[in-house]
Amino acid sequence: MESFLIKGGRPLRGEVTISGSKNAALPIMAATLLTDEPCVIRGVPNLSDTRFMAQILKSLGAETEFKKGTLETRAKKIQGYADYDLVRKMRGSICVAGPLLARLRKARISLPGGCVIGARPINLHLKGFESLGAHIEIVGGYVHASAKRLIGATTFLGGRAGSTVLGTANVMMAGALADGVTVIESAACEPEVVDLANFLTAMGAKIAGAGGPTITVTGVKKLHGAEHWIIPDRIEAATFAIAAAATDGEVTIKNCRSEHLRAVLDKLNEAGVSIQSREGNLVVRRGKKLSTADVTTLPYSGFPTDVQAQMMSLLTLAPGISIITERIFESRFMHVSELTRLGADIEIEGPSAIVKGGRPLSGAPVMASDLRASAALVIAGLAAKGETQVNRIYHLDRGYERMDLKLRKLGARIQRVEEK
Ligand code: EPZ
Image (spheres, rainbow, N blue to C red):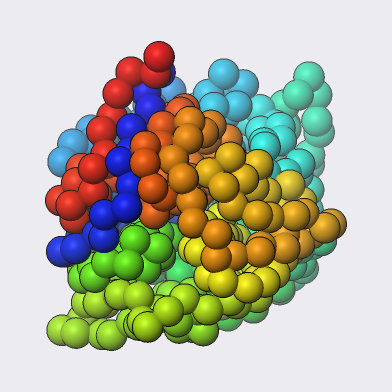
């Protein structure tokens, strides 16, 4: 297993180019199952998750070729069965359920099970499928979904923490080939949902309202092949912006859409970080001094839960009390104990973490527990005095394309090593 060895205390300087979005790519890759014609998806980041999704498409019978950021697929003849061994490795694979049900009127998908950040049930996905007339059974850890016909209907997808991103994606894809009109209420508004809707529209789907809380899908008989460029990864952009501020550096972030980052940029501003837009790029540097900020994670366009951990690393450096409240996932504070190992002072009170910031961090060996927690530990290691070893970086490789290479180009002293 690999780790990162980081010598901290050096400001990041220079330019970084953001890769395509993992969370837009995964459902769009799954959507290619909706047609038997060739599809070409460009700007797909080379990550263990996207390589894995390509494997899943292949296991379902699709021809796929994934190289240099371009995925070419043709799902001429496919089967409706995705087994446990595949699905358990990546929860995002649940988004093949909608396309399989739509195309084959049946799907047998392993239940994804929980993960370290929360129970992550799929009841809303199944509710959406049932509202379109699908019969759902859970047998032996598998969801068996089948329908003679899928009939458009209105379905409310709001849950415990508000809308569901992949649930919205799945029902949108099932509705694309249903008879009649599907209306998704309390739909997720994330840019990744909009990017999927744009790809489906390019395939001939009729979708209105993506990006807002009500999405209307008018079913069509058949979808055709299409080409698409994936949007830049807003979570990667936010991660590099925070790393620039945490190391008191100055970084130009290229290929990012600031309109997708409003809530993050607003909070960074509040925390004393200077952000300028220059020729379509963002230039990020720490202002005079860091200030405290209270953060609550919410569905889009609120502050993204996928940036909560990274923001916590930054706020450990801001003198005073910052309160971070996690409203989306019930156990997404795994990074707290590891940041404490680096000298941070953080207490967890229910859904909130109370960060007493300002104490300098010092390097130590730490353990990554999930994708965004590992990014937070890398940022803290870059800001800390001395050496930090971040173990189990396979978590990070799931969602960041060659982060170590990009950081070294910004002057970071970071190496990928075999874990001792
Ligand atoms: C997507 O997951 C992202 N993953 C997650 O990013 C992200 O954290 C999440 O959206 C929220 O923004 C991908 O796009 C591949 P949800 P998703 O359904 O769709 C509850 C990362 O770091 N819920 O919007 O699985 C659920 O438990 C990952 O890149 C139900 O109760 O998340 C959670 O509390 C991590 N029932 C909340 O809703 C359901 O049927 C939001 O989950 C579905 C969800």
